[in-house]
Image (cartoon, rainbow, N blue to C red; front, side):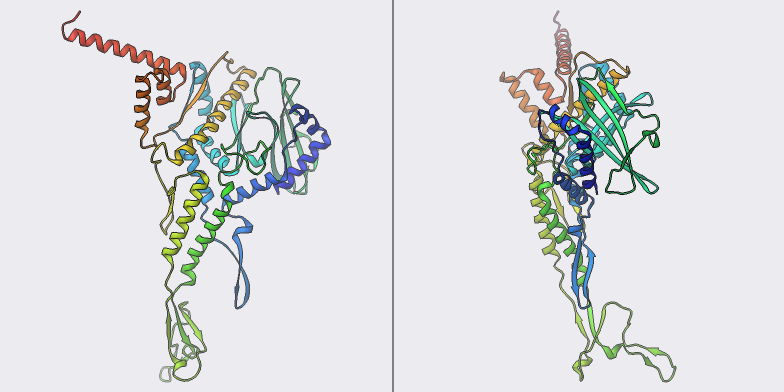
Amino acid sequence: MFKGLIAKVRQVMYKMGLIKGIQKLSDKREIPVNDEMYDRIEMWKAIYAGYLKDWHDTSYMTVNGKKQRKRASMRMAKVASQKMATLIFNEKCEINISDETLEKAIKDVLKANKFNREFRRYLEYGFALGGMVMKAYYEDNQIKVSYTTSDCFIPLAWDNFRITEGVFVSTFRKGEKRYTHLEWHVWEDNNYIVRNELYESKDDNEIGVKVSLDVHFAGLEEEIIFHEIEKTIFVYFKPNIANNFDTNSPLGISIFANSVDTLKSLDIAFDSFQREFILGKKRIIVPNSALKTVIDPLTGATHRYFDADDEVYEAMNLGDGLEGQKVYDISVELRVDEHVASINALLNVLAMQIGFNAGTFTFDGVGVKTATEVVSENSETFRTKQDHETNVEAAIQELVDAIVEIADAFSVFSRPAEYEVTVAFDDSIAEDQSAEIAKQIQLVTNGLNSKVRAIMKIHGLTEKEAEDLLKVIKEEQKTITAGNVDLFGGE
């Protein structure tokens, strides 16, 4: 449905002449809002949710004709996205800002918006759908941060570093009518402009007609012009994976975008594993005559030879004579080990395609287990983690910039002349993290790195914070040395 909505939004944009103007702002590049990319986002979203009609609605033949059923799913897209998000961002991650006053103000804003919880959740959505958007805004006398998945955002202009203009699309129903809210973020004459539009329709496939914002958003302004804002106040995050479906699109792709066939094979194998226990259950073939009701001539009570309600029994016409009176016990040997081995082989393929170590996911016949640690910093998982951390850190840095822009625009706190933002990620999952410390010591000893740079690498600090820490260390060393001299009677 959203694919059709995107197409309708594009039609409105053409009618309003906005796409033509946007092409001029983006050096006449074609706006990459194509149906194919949003088709893929819808598919990734369905796979992440565990139900894609083309996969999971399957048919099979019986003696009574064709039947329909829903295929079981391992939901490995959800498991992989959650694993990646958890590896990269958790409560141990720290955001450091060189300006102490700004750092406190930013951390207060993030804490008020429950950033650690919400960012972690939407980071998972971003890995699953190929992107997510964070936006800073001012409401009820405080700075707030909102989040949107990539299927509800249309990019309009971008440069080599980020998407600079876009439209946020949200839909909701009230009674028989459906409403579409469009929030435009564009640059015009060096001014940052936010426009709000509301459309009403009775048809889910139509945007409908433009209506007053007061219908649902009383007090919301149609246009807000920011003269002093210098940077875009929204941030588009995408996984650090090249888009091999549309190389000209600024949209990202899911971490499992190139693993779709493997995920389908996993669901087929898992479904077969489940049905092995259903189709391979014990059966006892008995003659039809054995299930006939017999009346006891003495008591008048009715009896059966076998329990007709027990599903283990199958009544058949086995013919006449003694052979037709025999009972056959059919016990099928279950192929449990074969299924488990097949599923684990596919899980290793999936891990390789996503960038995890082989063995990251294992199936033991009961459920999927994930490796709790990255073996070393040379492992594939750790390298993939660091690749994605590059984009995550950039997104957090841009979010801090957006908060600063909003704070300055609404006089919440002033904009510092200069500041540096770094993110210290949790690398404790690497068993040989101590090797990094030894490596930095060796580099410093051999004159191949400065102490400041080594401290920045080991502790994840900014350059100023590393310099301050080095001063503290030197002062402590002076104190210790003086104490030792005094201890041995020196002056």
